[in-house]
Every structure is written in C-alpha cells, then in structure tokens.
Image (tube, rainbow, N blue to C red; front, side):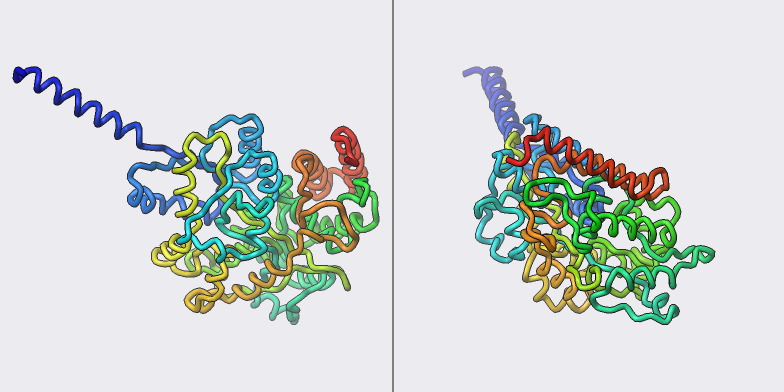
Length: 438
C-alpha cells in the first residue's frame, strides 16, 4: 500500500467517523410557554447539554394562547415540528386517547410514585403516563397584608366572594396606584375562561347539563359574570381586559394589586425579594366561594410530552426525565434558592424542610391541589371532567370564542346579558355541529 493510498484511506475513515458522530447528534425542538419557570429552565439548559453532549435543545417560546394554537395545529396534522410539547391537563387525556402522544416509561431513578397523586392521575390515560409535570397548580388568593391591615380587615382562610368584594373596595386607591383586585381579563380558554369557569362553578354554575345542553342562560352564570364585571370595572386596574397571568403577576410584584386570585404557582414569584417589591407583605387564602358553595379552585400542570410525530423520542424522553426530575429541582435550588423551584408536582418537595422553611405558602398550595376535584367540579352532576375547562375536543374552540365575548363585557362593549346570550347561542350551535349528545 502506497503512502498516498494510506493517507486517503485514513482520511476516508476519519470522514466516515465524523459522519457517524454527526448522525448520532440530535437537536430537540421544544415548544414551551413564556412563563417564569419555563424561562428559568431555558437558562439551565447548558447543564443538560453538558451531561448529554449528543443532545442539543432548540427552544420555541410562545405566549400562552399562541402556544396552544401552534401545538394543537401541529399535533392534529401530524406536522412534526416539535419533539417536546408543553401542554396541560386538558390536552393530555384527549390526545393520549387518540394516540397523538407517546407514552412515557420513566426510569426507577425518576421515582414516578413521588408525583402528587392528583397530578399523576390527570396526566395519565388508563394508568399510563403521557406527560411529565414541570409544575402543578391550583388557585388561591394572594393579598397585601399591609393594605388589608390598614383597611381594618382580616382575610379569612376560606373567604367568600362577598368578602373579596368588600376587601377590594376597601383597598382600592387608584390615586396611589393601587387597585383593589387583579383578575384575568385577557381572552383565551386558558386565560379569562379558566378563571370564569372555576368562578361559575363556585356560584353553582356549569357549562353543560347532563344532556350536554349549554347553561349560560342560567342564573348562576349571570351571578358569576355580574360579580366579575362589577369588581373588574370598579376595583380593577386600567386595561384589565388585556391582563392575563403574566401581566397580573407583574402588577402584583410592583405593588399595584391589593389582591390577586390566580394560580398557586405565582406564590414563589410574589414572595421572592429578587422579583417582588412587596415580597414581605404577601398573605394567602384558599380560593373564594359563594356563601355555602364550593371553592373556585382548579387543577392544572404545565407538562412535557412527546408528540407521536417526533423523530427523536428517545432523546426527548431523556430531556423530559431531566427537566421534571428531583435532580432538576435540586439544581434550581442550588442556583437560585429553594423559593425558585417549580412547585406542585412531587410529594418529596412538601416533605423537604429546606423548602417549607422558605415557602410560607407550601401548605396552602398543597391543600388547594389536593382539594381540587376535576372529576366532580360543580354542585350538580355533570357529564364532563375539568374544573376550569371541559375535557372534550370542542371546548378549546368554543371557549376561545366565548372568552372574547366575556372580555368585551369587561370593556363595556357589551352587557353581561348580551355576552351570556351570545355565549349560549355559540355553545348551542357548536355542540349541535359536533353531534352532541353523543
């Protein structure tokens, strides 16, 4: 063999080796929501890539409504744009049953039995886990203790809506830049409709009766909507119809909300002095109820799942195990403190004294999650599952339209009665088109 031939053979072998290595490298495209916990995870991606040098992460970070539209379109068309999707307890049972998601088979080290039972059940179909929770949540009231004291009021552990209205009026001081209450007004099935659906449940309302007939023309929805529009108009911040979770979080953290009824996951942000100007002045209470009714809490988990169209399911599962593991929680604690760890998914977190010592909201958060009952969300028996949504495919489209109608009622473009009449007509038409009752 000549020297030249040996060089050529060596070069060929090197090229082949390099080509094999390149073929083994994987780039995962991860679609996620633009909230604080997910942004924090992106900042720690380098830790994952260092431990798994053959896997790179490419993030697609979207506003909540946009994310839902994009991932729903992609999975329904088998588009294959994403290897990992951030979805929730609404999508998982529907998409899992349709075989749109790959089942997750976690390692023993992952300790799937440590997941909170309510969260694990909500992300499973027939006992099989189809998504892993990044964080879980219910709903509760966050309030300014200094303003409540100055108003001469004491927040009950389980307040009624009447008390919430009284406290909002007492703390409302727009000349000082403080508004009595902040609530979701932004249209969207996961924004204002999540809040309004759980609120209506607490007033005795429901989306459908046992025959799947829409119920927006019933007194309970009128009572809930009238309360909502009244407190938003009289004691809410300007432009309340544009505020979703992230906008209200920013308002509360900068001292502009007397109260905020929203997701329990916000507690870690409003009490973190690195993020909040009122961190040492925040109290918590369970989700409100109507007099003698049930609490307006819900159950949700932003979770990571693998669409059936992914060409990299093994690498995707490796990433999901890392991002939702006990080890990831410890990594966040090591870098940013225990107050910053994603809550609401694992029993072990609520048994960890390092966490409970710095998280005064931990016990209340866990109680809210455990008391949420999406299987029986209303006073009356209903044919559906879901406390802040209805777990049927048609809900997403119907609730998106109705969310716009209800947002218009907040701005005064339409009355409560007109909005509810239009909602009843929309839901009735779309349910008939979908063939209900089935």
